[in-house]
Image (cartoon, rainbow, N blue to C red; front, side):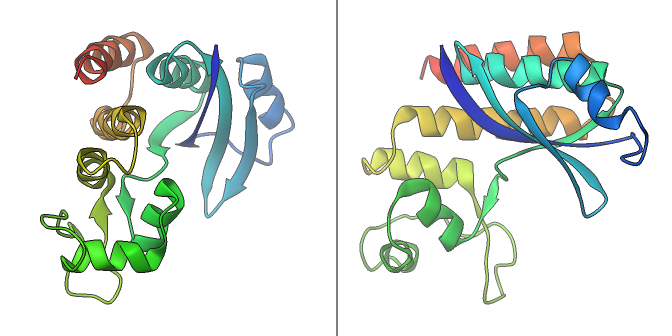
Length: 178
């Protein structure tokens, strides 16, 4: 088994309650570091599982059984050049050259804050481009796609664990067979 790292951002429980941490521990989140930041419950997982999707599915189920509402998953699918550098091991200067087209063609355009000094890129598109240019492995692309899919499902509202597991398993099969 492999250890998979990701975070779940949740809400719906009072962090001041006496049983706050116990609820997560008893629900199976003993492999998560728990914190409360900016009004959100943050569970940073280091979960052992055969696949990344299996780790995400089981963690979601555990968080819901603790009584929390899953808001989203991280690492965030929107990234700046510094985030891309950290995820790929490339320098920010090299990434600036890629983004400007000076080092290679067709780097994905920013998807948010395009007119600002700090644009954001879609990590899925960037990881696919990086994979095509042999800068990341296929696993990085699969993880990016799965996090994006998990967030799409979470955005639809209250996430029912069985439904989430079915959708994620289906997506994982499609992404992992590419």
